[in-house]
Image 1 (tube, chains in turn brown, cyan, red):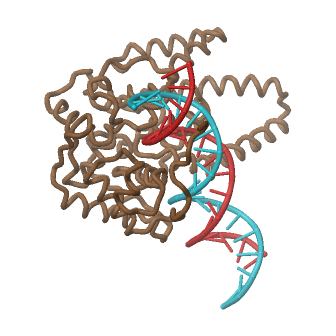
Image 2 (cartoon, rainbow, N blue to C red):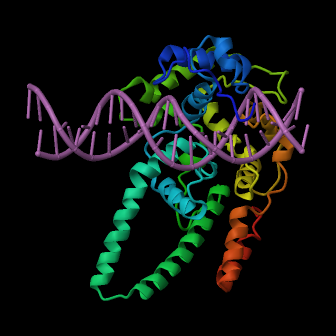
Length: 336
DNA sequence: AATTTCTGCAACCGCTCTAAA
DNA sequence: GTTTAGAGCGGTTGCAGAAAT
């Protein structure tokens, strides 16, 4: 038989918003077995959902450490610049914002940023035409602006990767990316909707209960060991060392960047790794990391990302030596 | 207050990619 | 080399709540 079979037959499969009961069942199951092997989740849990739906619910909503709503200015700028550079590759973009899901970023782009940019664009164009600027003049300005934007995007990425460096362009929101900050809880993110599905409080409560009763768990059946968090705050620390599944499935270089990010986040800024960090690598990363990828492989030297190569190539092609120099200078830092 | 329109977001759908048999 | 299952990605839809009339 050619082609793929559906992940489940649609007979008897429930669709639509998840109920608290379903969430509890799913979370309990993942508590017991760890994420993965989604195909078996519905049959093992009795959930009348298809495996895909279970995975989606977990990765986009139930997974601990997810930050929802209230995008910061910094995050917004990151998304705008990354979208300009990477296009609608939401998973790749999301990998630079570890607490955000691709779905969340995609929604935010479609509902807020696209309109905002359109408005800005038309507004500035009309204004300039009125001021007597020609199209070519505008194009030149636009190109310079784009160069600046690329520079700024790169700077932002560097800063996102180098958490202890003071920011010059976009002040890094430490609450967004810091490894040290363990005060944020998922349920502290404001959310307007009152429905169950939109209530992070409900989920957080669910998870806190789960975590409170969850013993440290060592999975010997998976490729690594993992521990469940006994403290909700650990979730936030944990997520910063998370490797999104997205990074493992793509063959192009753009998504090799997240591996580098994860590696960096696992290491001290001077490139060394403490003994404690080593312990954390095995006890913390394991739960959410790509199960198929060895931990040490992730902690290797950070390669040039596709993004950076693209920037260099593009700059070289257009004779933008200043951009190249800027980029190369910045690569002398331990980060690159 | 009732109705209509708009908005935001969770979830679904269809597709691709990867790895294993 | 081919087939198949599992997983992930991006586009789209549908619904609930908010805002406007």
